[in-house]
Image 1 (cartoon, protein in one colour):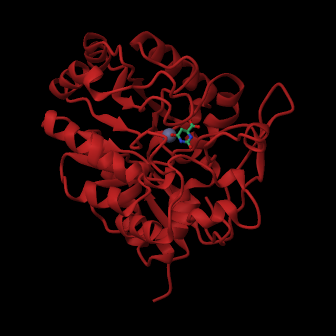
Image 2 (image 1 turned 120 degrees about the vertical axis):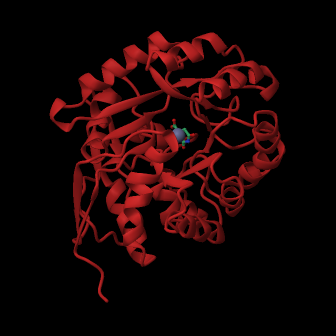
Amino acid sequence: MSPPTILSIRRPDDWHVHLRDGPMLAACAVHTARQFARGIIMPNLVPPVTKAAEASAYRDRIRRAVPASLKFDPLMTCYLTDDADPVELVRGKSEGVWVAAKLYPAHATTNSAHGVTSMAQIAKALEAMEKAGMPLLVHGEVTDPEVDIFDREAVFLDKVLMPLLRHHQGLKVVLEHITTREGIGFVEAHPGRLGGTITPHHLSYNRNAIFKGGIRPHFYCLPIAKREKHRLALRRAATSGNPAFFLGTDTAPHTADSKECACGCAGVFNAPVAMQVYAQVFMEENALDKLEAFASLNGPRFYGLPINEERIILRAKPLAAPQRIDVPGGNQSIVVFRPDTPVEWSF
Ligand code: DOR
Ligand code: ZN
C-alpha cells in the first residue's frame, strides 16, 4: 500500500525546547508555536532560571513573543543547582509556575556552568520533587573529561542514573534527547517510571554527518550524534508505539557566527522543520500510524496532562522552509536544520 499523502494528527507538543531570551526569543518562539501546542521550556538562560518568580516572568516574555492566535502554552522548568531549594521547588509546582526541574551535570553543555556537581548535593531537592510528583528531566551525560565524548551517555546511565533511581524510588524521570542504544534499553527497562525524548536530528543522521567533507558545525549538538547502530535503535524506539518515548526536539538556536567559528556552540535549530522531519522518519520506517502516539499522546500521558483536541495537517510534498532566520535588531541569523537526506513532508 502506498503511504498517505495527507496526515492529520492531534496537535503535537514539544517536550524539550530552548527558546532563549531577548532578540533570540523574538526570532525563534513563533516557529515552535506554529507546530506545537505546548513546550517544555528549558531553563538554561544566562543566568539560569532557578526561582519561581523568574520562571513566571520568563513565561510572560515567551507569551508576549508569540502571536496570541497560535495559542501556545509554555510549560516552565526549574534549573537545578547545588543550592536547589526544596521549598522553592514545591512552591513553584503548587503555584502552577513550573511542571518539572532540569538536571544539567555541571559543564555538560551550553550554559550548564551552574549545574549540579554531584547528586548528593540535590538529594533533598529530589526527595521533595518525588513527594510533589514533579518529574526530573535529565541531561544524561557524565562530564569527566577522561570519558570519551561518545561514551558519556552510556556511562551516565550506570554511574548516575541507576543509583539515582534506586535512591528515589518514586521519582519520575525523563531521559532527554536519547542518543544511544543503551539509553533506549534503559528507558525500556523502567516502564512507568522513565520517559525518553528523541530529537528529529538524532533520528536523521549519525556522527559521520558532522565530519562529511569537513567540519559541519550545524550538525553539532550535545549529546553528540553517535554511530549508525544507535540511530537505528532510536528509530525503532520512536516508531514502536511504546508510550515511554515521546517527542522532544531539543531545538537549540545559536547565531550562525557562534557556531561557525574555532569553538562553535552545541545545538541544532530545528523548530521550523521539526514535524516535517519526524514525519519523514516515520514514513521511512513504515510507521506513520505511530506518529500521533509519539508526537501527541505519549508525552501528555507521562506528564498527566490532557491531550490536545485540535489537529494539524501534514502534506506529502517536498519540505519548504527557510535556510536561515534573522535575529531582530542586528546582522545575526540562525541556520535552520535540514538533513542531508530528502524530506518529503510539508507543514
Ligand atoms: O546541543 C545542545 N544545545 N545540547 C544541550 O544540552 C543544550 C543546548 C543549548 O542550550 O544550546
Ligand atoms: Zn536541550
